Length: 282
Ligand SMILES: [Zn+2]
Ligand SMILES: [Zn+2]
Image (cartoon, rainbow, N blue to C red; front, side, top):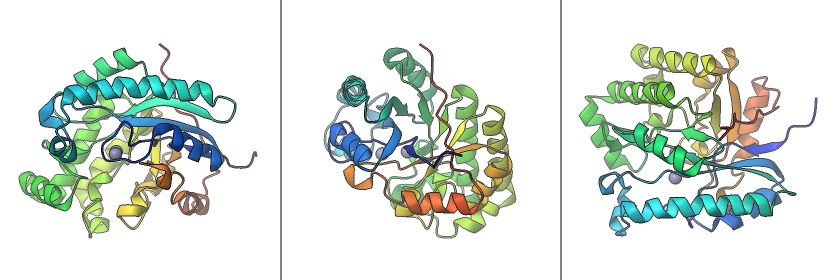
C-alpha cells in the first residue's frame, strides 16, 4: 500500500476573498506546497444571497451582498490561475462551501451554473436563520428559538438532511458543527432523537457515497475534530469515505492539527488512502 499522502478536502479560505480569514490565496497555496500536500481543495464560502444573510463582521464592515458576490466570482478566477500556475507542484481543486438556510438551494444551483466548480462542500452554519458557529451569543439565541439544546441539534441535522437530499454535495462539511459551543456535547449527541438523526444522515451519506470531511479545525474550538469520535466510529462502520480537511483560514492554519487528527484515524484502523472528491463534469 502506498505511503499516506497529505491532502485537504476542505480549506483555503483566504483573507483575499473571505472577511474572517487571513492572507492571500497564493500564500496559502504555497503553504500547502511547503507542507507537502499532494492535493488540496480550495473551498471558499459562497456569498450571501442578500444583505440580510451577511455574517455579522461583513455587515459591520459595510460590505454589501453585491460586493461579496463579485468577490466570489473573482475568487474562481484566481483559484483557476493558481491551479494552472502550480500544476507541477500540487493538484488543486476549485470548489466552494455552501450555506444552508431558507432559499439557499436555489442560490447554490445558480452559483453552480455560474462558476462551474470542481465540487462543493455541503455545510450548515445556520439554524432557524441564526448563525450557530459565529459566537456564543448567537448560538444561545438559536438554542432559545429552537426550544432547547437537543431541539437545536435536531433542527441542525434536519437542515443538513434536506441539504444532502437536494444537493448531494461531494463532501459533507464539519458534520457535527452544531456542538461547537456545547460543553456537554457528548451527552447531547447521545440524546435518542439527536442520535437517530445522526444515523439517518450517515445512512444518506453512505447511500450517496459522499465524502465526510474529517475536519481538524474542530480541535481549535472543541476538544476534538468534527465529527466527534462516536460519530466517526458510526461513519467508519458504514464504510463512509473519510478524508481530512484542515478548513484553513490563513497560512497559519494550513495543516494545523493535521498529524494529530490523522493519528486518531490510524488508531481506528483507517488505511489513510484518501479518496478524491467526485468532480462535476461540466
Ligand atoms: Zn470560514
Ligand atoms: Zn464551514
